[in-house]
Length: 473
Image 1 (cartoon, rainbow, N blue to C red):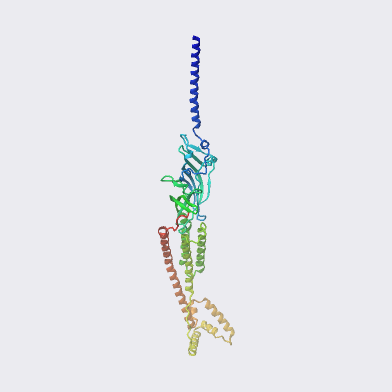
Image 2: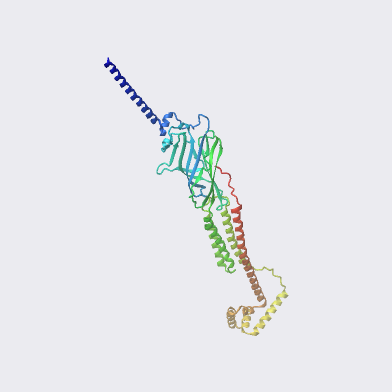
């Protein structure tokens, strides 16, 4: 009997021990299951869901639009090209949306770095509507990341290089300012399915170290808009870049050289009115140099029909140089002009009276010396003494070439001498008149150029407003 009781006690103790052991094994199994179920990879989320549709936006079952918040960081910008009407920008682009289907029980966010794995998830198909070219950065690894938070918030970040179209208004070039927009919208989801919003009060940040050779970034304006198309209404976001063109380069390369060329063309006003080769060479040289400078200034511009500020400047400088050439032509004409007087008809008695007066004058000169004799003989050749006549003719020519002007003039008849004196007086008057034109030009041309500069710079820097219409994005 005691032995039987002892056996029963031992058996009970053994069963109790085995039951306690099974209990602790159960707790360990439950803990292990919970640890295995804690999600630390997006593939586990997809396996748990089973029927996750990556083409369906998150709130499709509720028939509500998904809100996508965007922001960007401008890493770098290049020149705004007037020839191709575009500019280049390098940005870090971020998107944020909530997809409750991706909720998990992990205390930390889940990182996704595999593009193929990210392609298994729904994400907004945003694109840049006015980008000519766009590319992702893949060195040394694809420059993107995705964070999935426990509440289903998805954060997407990538680096993109863009060449963006910008239809510039060049009416004030190179004294212009430009407004260039970057428009972002969804390709497949309209406003009823997806709404784009800027994230926060300052969603567009700029690298303060950005320096462009010909532009200065003033500020960036951001806003959202609703675009109407034939297929419906689409939500879009716009980042508008306001830039001013740097004028220092154009002043050094265009404005100062052309101003000096115009000033050089005025040097002809200080040259002698009869210095025809020098004045012609100076005028033609300055005109050709200015034409070359004008062509070089337009090389960076498109072949547009609009009149630009640089066209007004180059055209006016060309007009000043050409006017200096016209002024020389007028001066040259004035110094050579002849007064055209209609000769009065003379009667026979007047002609006889003139011949008698000439004969008396010649006779008086004949009685005064050999020089007058030679002049008399040269006018009235004698057939009796041809040898003496030839000698007198040679002597007369030699003395006429060597004698001063007043001596040669005294040998002429009175009527011819009077005609020559009138011609000399007329030449002197013409010369004074031409010199007077030069004197006036020395003052009027610089004054007119200064007045033009005052109106030009005041108009284009202060009063001229860009006529660029609302951004057609």
